[in-house]
Amino acid sequence: MEFKPERFEPVDSEDINKDPYSFVPFSAGPRNCIGQNFAQNEAKVLLARIVNRFEIYTDPDHKVEPYMDAVLKTKSGLFVRLKERIHHDV
Image (cartoon, rainbow, N blue to C red; front, side, top):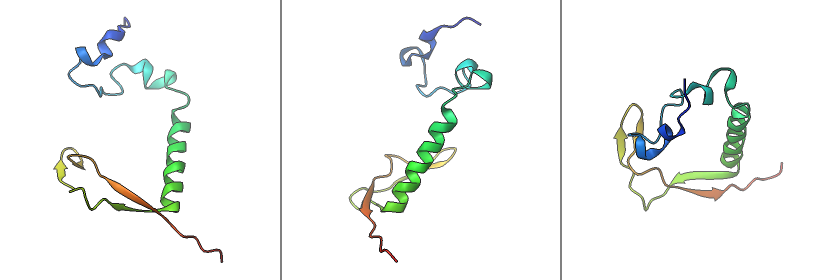
């Protein structure tokens, strides 16, 4: 298989978010990114720390409009606000 980096440019592509398996050496098998699992675990830890430290609620100034696709999501994203939790030492 010949490597043609231009095939991944948005100009030549209908979809900017190509399937991660569209060019296997970049995304799967023995040549998968060795830091992928670490990065995903790091993101989970960061999210868990945010959830532990803040109360998260939707922004009342932004209307949430559901959008049905393969999964249910919102048309314009989900705007949230964070309020720092007060931890009481026991």
